[in-house]
Image 1 (cartoon, rainbow, N blue to C red):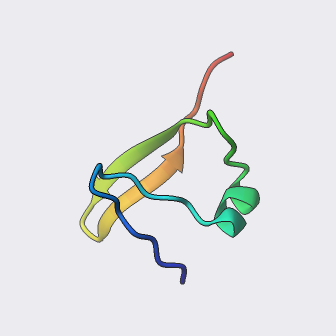
Image 2: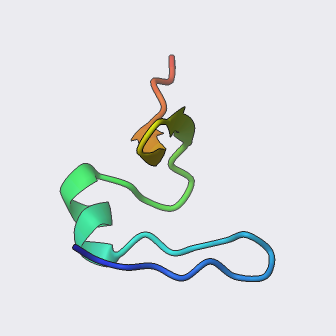
Length: 48
């Protein structure tokens, strides 16, 4: 399981293999969901 580091500004980097697998590119929008196990990031459903 990949590990990430949180910066002083609260930022982190999603590992490239996960970005490719889930189609996350620059400008992609994610929603942060607070769960009992931790934070879950999901691709936002956008209407275009």
